[in-house]
Amino acid sequence: MENEAKKRDFYDFCAIIERLRAPDGCPWDREQTHASLKKHMIEEAYEAAEALESGDGAKMADELGDVLLQVVLNAQIGKENGEFTIDDVTEAVCEKMVVRHPHIFGDVKADTSAEVLDNWEEIKRRERGGKSVGGTMDDVSLALPALTRAEKIYKKAIKAGVDTPFDDGSNGIGLFRETARLVALGLDPEEELRKTLLNFINFFKKFEENT
Image (tube, rainbow, N blue to C red; front, side):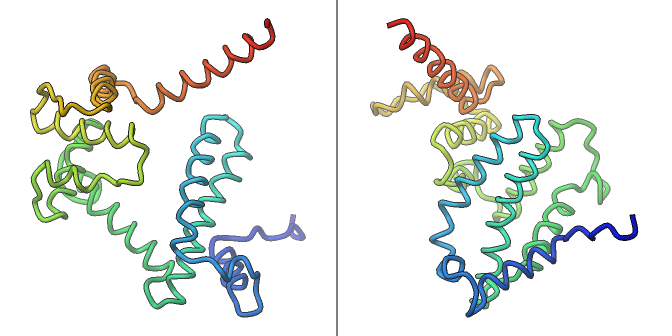
C-alpha cells in the first residue's frame, strides 16, 4: 500500500488547467473565453444530470468531472483577466451556504425541508434588496429551458398567493397553463416531458420495426 500512487486532488487539477492555459500550452484551451465556454457549461451540466440517473458511479464521477472542468477553466480565465480566482469561487459558495443555512450555522429554527426552502427564498429576497415577487421573477435565468423557467416563475407566484387565470393571447399560453397544472400536482414539467419523449422514441422504434 505504501507504494500506491497518490491520487491527484483538486489543486492538482487546478495546476493542470493552468498549465494548459500557459503560453506554450494547449492551443484549444488557450483560445477559450467565458463566452466560448458558456455552451459547454450547459452541455456538460445536462450530461451530468443524465449520468446521475444512471446509477453508475464511474459515469457520474466522469461527468461531474467535466462540469468541474468548466468551473476551473473559467476560474483560470478569470484569474488571467484579473476578474476572480478559484479561491474566490470557493469562498463565495462557502459564504452562501453558511448564510443560507441559519438553521445550521445560526439560531433559526427549521425542522422540515419546506421550512428550509422558505428561509432560503426569504434570505435570497433580502440579498436582492427586498425585491417584490415580480422583481425576483426577472432574476430567474433566461438561460434555463423554458419549461424549467416557467415552473420556477409559477412557483414564485404561488408563494405570493397568486393563482389566477392568465391569458395574453399568445401561442404559448396553453403550454404555460399545462406547466402550472403539473406544478400544482407536485410534478416537474421538464422531467415529465423528458419521460414522454423517451416513451415516444421507443414507440416510434417499434412502429418502424412493424412497418
